[in-house]
Image 1 (cartoon, protein in one colour):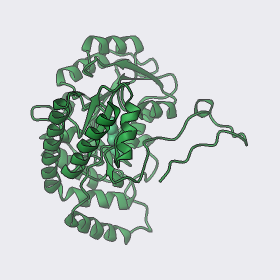
Image 2 (spheres, rainbow, N blue to C red):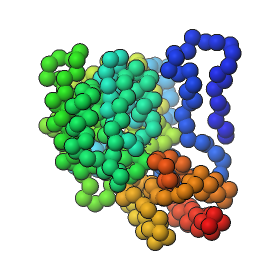
Image 3 (tube, rainbow, N blue to C red):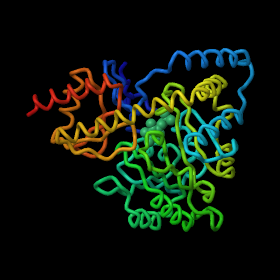
Image 4 (cartoon, protein in one colour):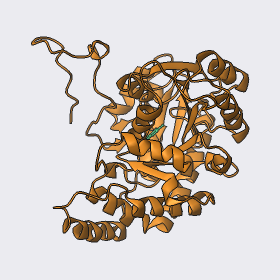
Length: 383
Ligand SMILES: *Cc1c(COP(=O)(O)O)cnc(C)c1O
């Protein structure tokens, strides 16, 4: 598979000027034996999961002459039940929203709460897609910074929020590409600052919306909390999750969030009619019937991650603490040469993050072994 590039030459089209030199996202999709580049779950769904999905999708297919359930409260209720099991936080189905990947959930958030004349603030290094959603919704993008160890300094965060008066603040925890989780006191300080924001064209006292992107939450280490626990007292908070990573269903395209019913109702205004197909709804609900099996697997991926961190440190690399299913490591004078050397040995990782760092996803034990061997080999060659 190759990624086609955009033809920027003739004939001219009335393209929005800010899109003139943009390329489509993103990560190379290459056909190599060991894929450790986009933080997928390395384990394909089990036969039992596949069988349930096949049966439930077949049932849904009988009704495909009709538009799907626009409100999909069945799926939203199942997701709420999953969050209760995973995080111990009880939510109503009406407090959950879903779309085709948490990428679309994020787009809904910016369509509802961003827009022309408004600002979204985040803290870099962070997920490379956010500025694109901002661009696509005509929202001004402002990135504050994280500390050298990728934690977030509360004083700096508050200063950026007070200066920029954003309508949306995006926090990522665990952060991509660094793996850093935010302590809840940092999230609460940001929520407090958000409550003091005056969005110029919003009702007085509205404050900013705070989104905590928890795409990797299931991989968090013992003792690392989820921001879901803050929802009860915080009507402006949205916590987004996805079935793409821990749940092992990146191909399904199902992302979701939990928030106050009022916040969710605002997203219902901007979604396309029938945005979530009946097939997607059925497949997601079928996979959620196997939650216990999937949650058991997450434990072994966490152990694999922790062992990889230890090994990389033993080799003398600098490794960012990680609560996700990937590891950011360095520092390399020429990271591209290392990335290429690994690719030449059949191991695809991601050249992403601040200069000098590389990111590797946690694979099966066999894949991780192949990565360790290839990296050792590349280091010898480049020395
Ligand atoms: C992978 C990832 C997502 C998930 O995107 P989906 O559209 O749900 O596949 C969201 N946020 C971050 C930070 C990610 O790394």
